[in-house]
Image 1: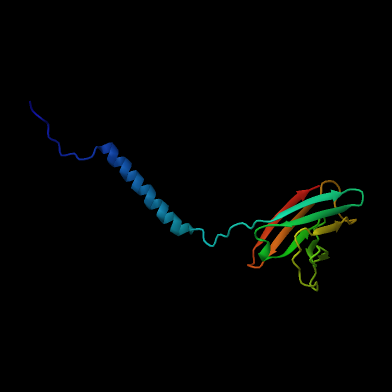
Image 2: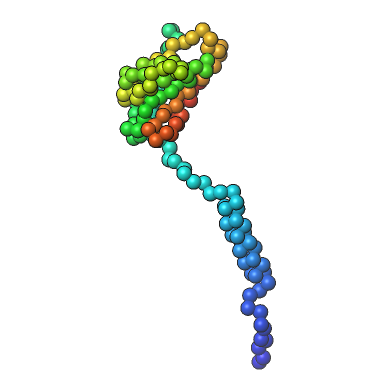
Amino acid sequence: MSFMVTDDAVSPVIGTILMVAVTVIVAAIIASYVFGMPSNIQKAKLMGSSVQMEMTEGIILLSYHGGPDDISLTAINITAPNGSVWYTSSTDGSLTISTATSPLPVKPNMGATMKLFQASDWPAGQKRVLAVASFSDGVQQVILDSYF
């Protein structure tokens, strides 16, 4: 009985697959350097808020419920349906319109209710209210985006 002796250590198919795999890995490494790796990614802050609208008086009530990241909260900014921006100006949730001469924003207490009174220049139909929390580390995060 005779055995055939060959010098091929790896079949051409496996060799081709290995070369393609190496090429893909090298291309991924080069692409990560060329396009930049994501850095300085911050985790989302955990906050709670709810909103309800009292149709009889045209008042939008926003309730703040705190959360694990409450300790670093500095203020809540609320964008009314007409685009005006309000912020919390006292611990009970009182709102002040944002102007160049406005006093500094204040962190609301947990359970505080913020009231937006309907203005004549609010658009007809569906209305959007947006609440953005500001934190001591400079992060701003949407905590409420609601339509009425």
